Length: 312
Image 1 (tube, rainbow, N blue to C red):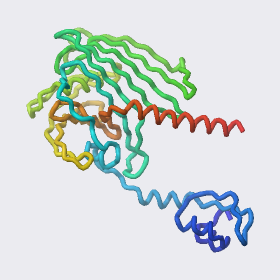
Image 2 (cartoon, helix red, strand yellow):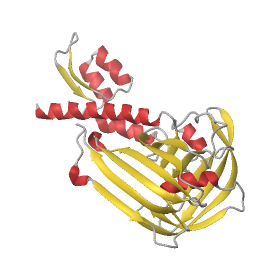
Image 3 (cartoon, one colour):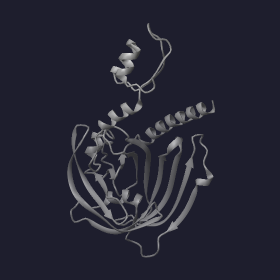
Image 4 (cartoon, one colour):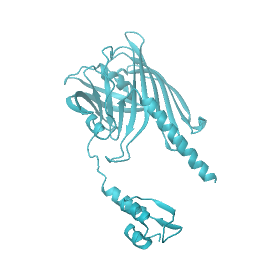
């Protein structure tokens, strides 16, 4: 009976409980069901039938991620309320939830971590960014990146010098030394038209909201990989619908050699609310770290359960 489809299984088994389950379209294994005519019946509903039906019903996203689309996909329902005290050129902390889309509207879209950026004023000519990012991997593994970046207080927050570390923490809380790295770096003299990808999260909030704003620069991706000939420009003000509310948002777009187009979305207070590139979005969310911890704990328990069953 391993190869029967739902209707055949129902007619063969003649069991009301099983028939009801199949009519509801449940893709499930029933190890043992007792009824008037059948005792110890094992039926496997062919997974291919259910999966084929499910795949045929999936809808391809088919357009770039925007705040409105993120709302439609369930990635956000609102942004943190604006604060009149927020000043892009002051001291602040922004935390972003990292969300990825696998290409379909109905499934495969997940929160995968968080990014926290803290801005500290050093002087009129320099500032410091403290970066902490955690991204969830398979089997409850976590990649933790921490960086301290001294930047010029120019339009691009051009990095002057930095320290960056990358570590991987396993499900049992142990750091895997073989995968750890620590690097120090400094920009060559005269590189005042450079930027780091994290630095742009800070810099874009201080840019003039105007069609005249166009910046050309080279970018250090992850403070390690040079991507030359980048261009950041103001695209315009767009009507955006979030949680049923119409919120006009400003968009800056980054184009350049060796990168995918990247859009930065800001409110009228110059707060950076979202950054989107290809299938990944960074969404301003005060609960981002808490959400990541909850997902990690769930993944850790699932991983331990799988390990336990394998040992048996």
